[in-house]
Amino acid sequence: MTHIGTPTSRVDGRAKVTGAAKYAAEFNADTLVHGCVVTSTIARGRIRRIDASEALRVAGVIDVLTHHNRPHMARTDRSYKEDVSPPGAPLRPLYDDRIAHSGQPVALVLAEEWEIARFAANLVRVEYETEPHVTDLARERGAAFAPEKPITRGDADKALAAAQVRHDAEYSLPIEHHNAMELHAATVIREEDGKLRVYDKTQGVQSDVLRNILQLDSVGQGGADIQLDAEETDRGKRMFLYVLVHDRALFGGDDHLLLRRLRDDDFVGGGNA
Image (cartoon, rainbow, N blue to C red):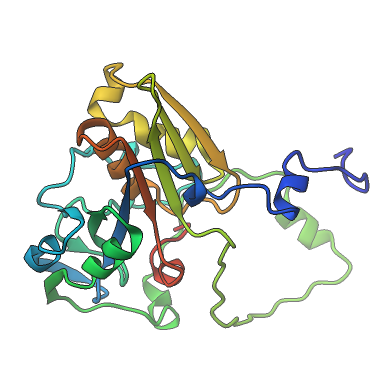
């Protein structure tokens, strides 16, 4: 670790501290279509019915995507796995009628302006069939399971046994939310030569974003030329919803698309697990 104790400049440091760097939602284009997410109001259950008719009547609204009319998505779990994903089935927003957590995306409103998309998102009516949910993790510790053994270095047990001082205690910490300065967003712009330029917010350019884009049918068949530019910020905030935006840009007839999420969504709308 020769960098420890050595002053090292970030390649993008000056641009960020001077405000010259752009977030993924700050790349503009003519005829930009804006997407706003509708999230669930229950913690667990199923979607019984979605009524987007009132939202679709708003002038400037182009479409409302749900699990009924979304573009094709891969079926297998491995298509959605990130390199550092925990065990279990990954969440696929808009994939089906299942609700796994509060604030889960259930619809995506596309409109000519961001304000129109956000307004129309409030008009989407969703009826649910609720199921019991658990929020007290301490009470559920008896049902906890041990994940697959992670990659380890050294011998922690041996080092602990040989330590001159050992302290064994249990601590409880309050809930803390990690919110990056940049809101979660993705922008897809079609260049004059037909190439798609994708701006995304992620640290996992190869493992997360690119893998999810490549799951689209026509991309896998060589039907698109894509250049990906990603801002290295927060990681693992579930890019699958943005794949729908990429897909819409490919096959929906929209030249440029922008999807961004609200600050409120950072608290319940995504996570590393």
